[in-house]
Image 1: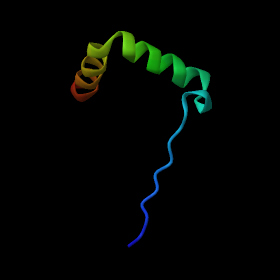
Image 2: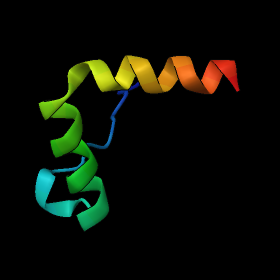
Image 3: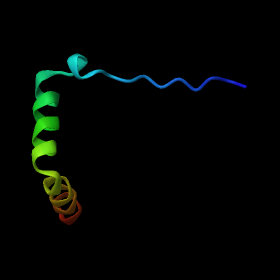
Image 4: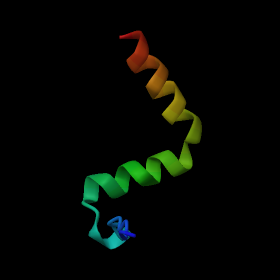
Length: 42
């Protein structure tokens, strides 16, 4: 049986803009669904 290893990034390994996006999504969870809906419309 093969091992299925997935790579995980720690928070420290993320770029600054990725950290900003994660923080924004944590503060505004509904914004994720609104953004997806807007992308589907366009």
